[in-house]
Length: 120
Image (cartoon, rainbow, N blue to C red; front, side):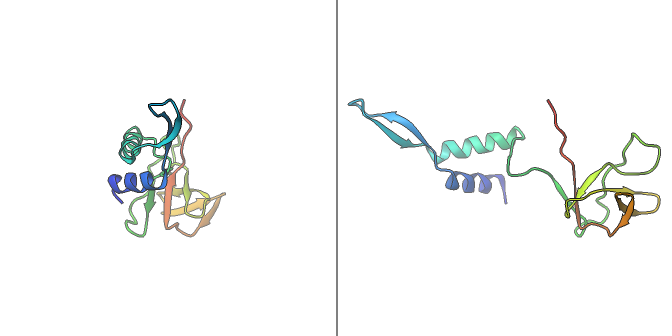
C-alpha cells in the first residue's frame, strides 16, 4: 500500500470535527476536511511518526540472506537481538549459521525485526 493510499484510508476511517460558529453565534460541529487529515497523516509519515508501523519486518521467505547486523559490542560473530514472528527474542550466530533463543537452538524464523529503542 502506498503512502497516499494509507493516507486515504486513514482519512476515511478518522472523520474529525471541530467546533465552529455560525453568523448568529450558534456553535456547531464542522467536519474537518479529509484533505487536511490526509496532509497531517502524510506529514506524520514524513516525520517518522507513523503509529501503524512499529517495526520493519524482514521476511526471510523472500530473502533468506536478509539477516540482522552483527552486534559490534561482542567479539563473537553474533547478531543484534531481534524479535521473531513468534514474539521471541533471538540471535543469529554467523559462525554456525543457526538461530538461538534463551541459549537454545531454534528453528529459523520466517521473519524478524529489530527491537524498537526508546530515545529521548
